Length: 319
Image 1 (spheres, helix red, strand yellow):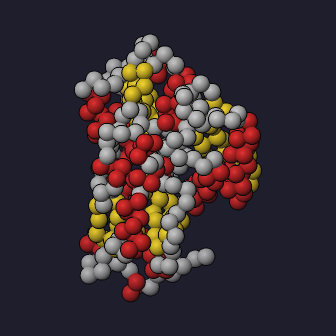
Image 2: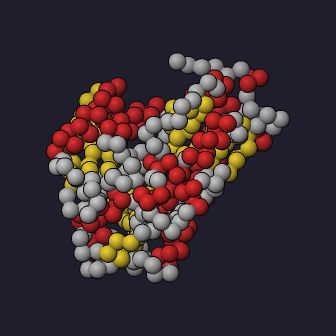
């Protein structure tokens, strides 16, 4: 349904649209990109928007693995509480951080055009995963990346590696690890794409569900904001994420389950690839489905059920 936004409903310096976000450089870039697109769509000045930085638990606790302190909601809970309470009008998120179930009264139906989905291999000394010597130390907080790497290179030592892009780059420089992985989308958005020695193709290392995508969350009953966001929503990204997130939801994915997935639209067909791994990387189960784009969520559910049917009991249990 197409919504219209009356001139009197538009944000203004006297009534700015409040954009909630985390405070990292990448999160701020994403919030400012949403602002830029809305400014262009409605010919609005920058003063018609206010960026509200909200501290989230995931950013405040840096010395523990995400799976030990609560998983994906750690990067969204406080922001969503501010949205529900009316302290902000919209919330901008990295979609790969988002739980598959929204809090009651909130809607996530606006997605910006998706960027590079690939993982980037980052190292001050080595050019690729293949170049790493036996026993090299690789840092990552992503259970998916750790499991995928252990599957390919069980000889490597894996260590926990938390923090934003700048923090992880500093840890590499200090010698905490020989290499790490960062999403190419985030590096590109920060003007740091050259930091990656290699962009890893999905055929070699399938990315996280929704990697490279930015989502904008709103209150379900806010028709004014819904009309604004409809103008900047990218339908193809929304269709791809609907399939991937249905896949993730059926698997009950969290930061404690190594899951990868990627949907691509080819004409009127959606191609969905999925992978589940044992946490120690000793086994991976992969498959893919193709079908009509409109059936993306059903494809996601079917693919997840197929992979689960092939997984033995205790497949996701940590050793």
